[in-house]
Length: 215
Image (tube, rainbow, N blue to C red; front, side, top):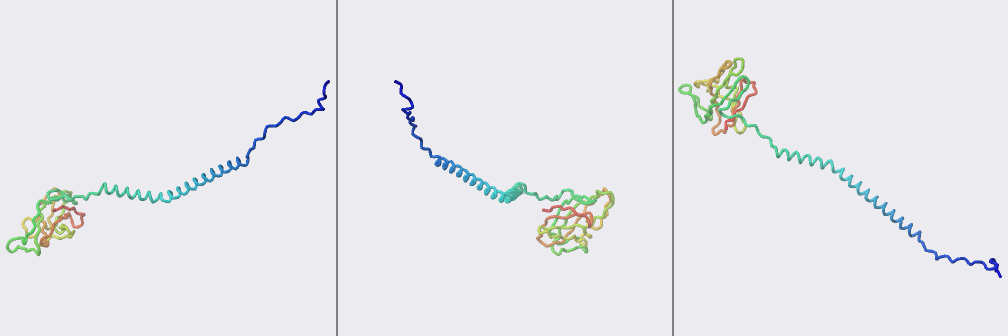
């Protein structure tokens, strides 16, 4: 005898136990992670900005300090050399004249003989030199254009009044033609114990002059 299937309804199949999900927790974790990443990124960015501003503000000073330091180092490594003036026995030139100082005498109390004797106020210094005209025209050589210099930088004029009485002084208005040369004396009346530095020689009163060291 067949039973009617409708008389015995089928029981529903049991469902597997539902798993408990915590989407809220998962979302919260993800949210916290993103928030932390954003905060860390913002913090790093702020630090970079601050460091950039500080370095940028000090950059000019650093460059100036470096430049100044480099300049000082360069200056110390390459000091300027003071030009050395020519000395006794060397030929120097000024204008139309070439000069060569051959000897220097000092400590003389007087010069000349007889009625031409001249006594020094301090001491006489005699500068022996040769003067040659290297120009194309005659030039007058005069001791009044020449200067004696001491170690303190003071300058002294020649004593033309006494030098004119010296034999072969050739220092008072001596006219020298082109190609000719004369030997002469420059006479200076200076204090006793004077420390000589140089003599400044000129072809005229208005020339630039040239310095010969006497040290």
